[in-house]
Structure formats: structure tokens, C-alpha cells
Image (cartoon, rainbow, N blue to C red; front, side, top):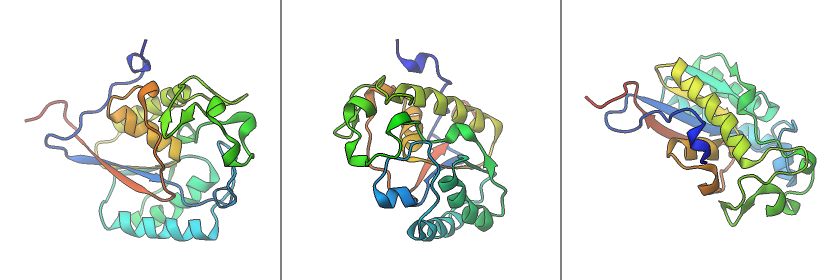
Length: 207
């Protein structure tokens, strides 16, 4: 049975949208720069990552005045959220469920060594949604965690929402919003400090 049967309903999009969801991947971390698998390990931003976060904050502040700003509790996300919070005049709401996918024993190895047998990802697509490194999460588990979290956040707020998170989380949110099951997901490159906007509606039906 599809995991979509057990995750929260997707908020309606388009057709007279009146609020937006903003997704921000964290800036480059020291482990990104070193080519290491991060998962839920907690490196901070590199100097380049801090510059990326500052540019992202300026760009975001020029486009929206959101109701709320959420961030993963991992350091690289919180350090990215800090200049955004300052630019928007908002506090940071820390949400641990926005953490990156746990990659268990693979965390800390060279990214080039993380193969599809452990990651479940091959050629920019999910090849096995239930594969996971020892002690880590599968794509399906990540999907369930993130979809439940984001559905709760969106239900709690009526205005624009900003989520500062991680590449795996961004991919899952976009798939969930499009009604795509984990086994059918693509796995595109999500650049550091990338800003993605999705239009949502407050009301359940078009006028």
C-alpha cells in the first residue's frame, strides 16, 4: 500500500493561491566542502555557506513578509536561518522533525562511497524507498516524518511559511505537495542555500 494512504493530506495549491511556502536548503557546511556524508551529524557552515545564507536572507526579505520561520535543529540549518530571521524580523522556531535523513553508520564517510544499496537512490531517482544504511532511515521513513511535520506546520499558520532545512527534506516536501509516493520520487540536486517557493491556498476550494 502506498505511504500516501497514511500521511496527512496535501494542502491545495494554485487556483487563487493566497499564501506561499518557502523552502530553503542550508548553506554550504564544512562537511559539504569536504565531501562527507552528513545525515544528522552536526557540522556548522563554512565561510562560503555564511555568505550564501546572507544572500538568501536578502533575497527572501525582498519577496515576502512571512508569518513564521521554522528551522531544523541542526547547526547548519540554524546558522542559515539566523540572518534570515534578522532580515525578516522573526524568531526562529526550532523543529527537530525537519532534520536531514539519518544515514546511520554512513555518516562521516566520503559522499562518493554512499552507494544505492544503502541510500536507495540511483541515477537521480529513488530506486528502493526502503533501503537504509545500518542505523539510518529509509526514504520512506524520512517521507513519513517530514510530511507529518509540514502538514502540522501548515495547518497551524495562515500566512507565508519559511522552512530552513536540508536537501532530503526539500525533496520530500516537493514530492508530498505533488502527491508523489516515495518509491516514485526523483532525487535531484538541491544546491546549498537554494530558495524554492510553492503557492498554497488557505481555503479548501476555489471561489
